Length: 129
Image 1: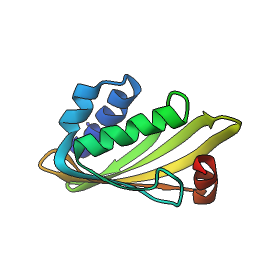
Image 2 (image 1 turned 90 degrees about the vertical axis):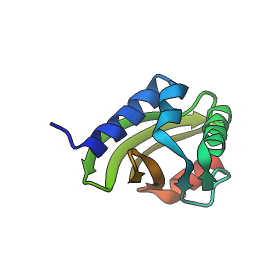
Image 3 (image 1 turned 90 degrees about the horizontal axis):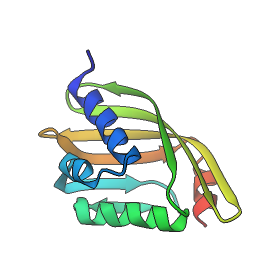
């Protein structure tokens, strides 16, 4: 049986894959922080569901439909979870195939903060340049 926070992360990625905005909105609190590392045009901190949904829309627009996320593994305890994710996308002539690490902090069953870091941060930044 999976830890509840592991299941939260798995449910979140399943909702993203099926583009289920209602399920995604339920996973986010009013002060959820989405922290995207790097120097690319989409790097930064997005606070609250509206800002996070705007970020997701920008990713889809900039990449011609979005990035494909493949959840490799999730490690969880009572306050956080770490997800290992394979990210694949295209943007014009650029391609991205990069492992990503996401650290989720939970607050009363919702994502309080998510921090996204790439194994090859320079490749991620170049993809969005």
